[in-house]
Length: 377
Image 1 (cartoon, rainbow, N blue to C red):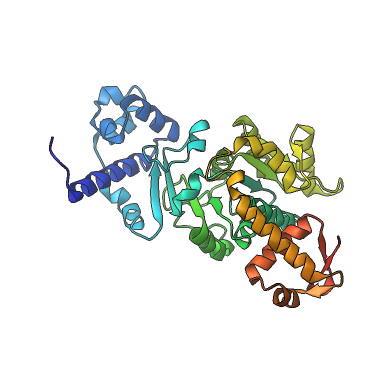
Image 2 (image 1 turned 30 degrees about the vertical axis):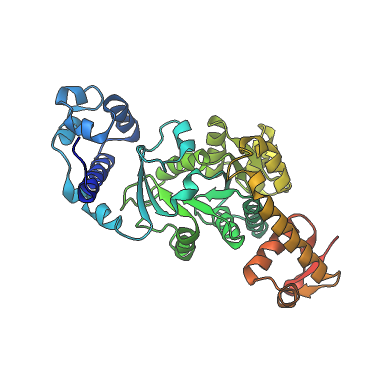
C-alpha cells in the first residue's frame, strides 16, 4: 500500500475542504438536498463524480449541471483565505468535532463556520434567550442565571442579539465560563454592530458559529433557522423575557420539538415582555425561580462519569461555595461598596463580580443605591 506523506495529506484535506465549501455555497442547493446527496453518495468527492442522471434524482437540472461543472474556485477563495486566520474553522459532517446534538435535529447544516474553540461544540449546554427589548431586570436575570449555570459547568448558548441574548453571553463571560453565539449572518459580519466588542470576547473565550457562508447579510428569514441551532446544541432552553410574538418563542417551540427541556421565568402580569413566558408555562414549560430548578430537570442528562458532567465539577462548585462564603463573611450586615469588598475578600474584580451576581440571584444579598451591597441572610 502506498504511503501518504504530510504534503499529500494536506493536499487531500484541502481538496476535501474545497469540495465541502463548493457544495455549501452552490446557489440553489439547500441543506435538505445537500444532505440527500450525502446520504446517497457518501461524500462530496462522490457527489462531484456522479453522473448527471444520478444527480437529477435529487436536484433539478440546473443544480445538477453546476455540480457537474466542478468546483468554482473563484466563489470559495474568499472563504479559503478566511480559514487561514487564527481560530477560524470549517466543521462538516465528516469531522469528529461536529456537534453530536445537532445530528439529532431535523435538517442539520452539513457545514458550520466557526471562530473560537471547537471544544465547546460538544460540551453540555443550556440555551438562554429572550426579548431584544428587555427590561433592566430581565437583562440582570439573564446575566445572573448565565453566571450561575456556568459555575455548574454548563456552557451558555444564545444568539448574540440585543437584550437578553447579549446579557446571557456577558453573564457567562463574567463568570469565567464558556458561551457559544449562534448568529444569522456570515462570520465576516458582526450583527448587531454594537456587539462587536462582545463578539471578540466570545471568540476569545468561547465560540461563534454560523451555518451561513461568509458575506451573508442580516435577513429576517435567517433568524428562525439560526434559532433551531441554538436549541439543537442545548439540553434545554431558558426563556427570560418574551413578548407573545417574540422569536424566542420559536426557539422554545423548536426546543420542545427536538425533545429538549423548556424553562421560563415568570414576571408581572402587567408586563408585555413576560406574557410570552407565561404562555410557555401554561403550555408546560417549567417555571424557574433559581438555577436549581433547571439543574433538577437536567441532572439525568449529564453523564456522571463524563469530564463534562456535573459530578466532575465538584471541585469547581466547592471553590465557588468557598468564595461565596468569603464574600458573605467580608460583607457583614452593613452596606458595603465594591472596592472595599474586593480589598477585604482578596478576590479579583472578575471573580467578585461573578460571586455578587450569583449571591443576588440566590437572594442572599441585595443591591442598594449608590452601587453598594447588603447581606440579607
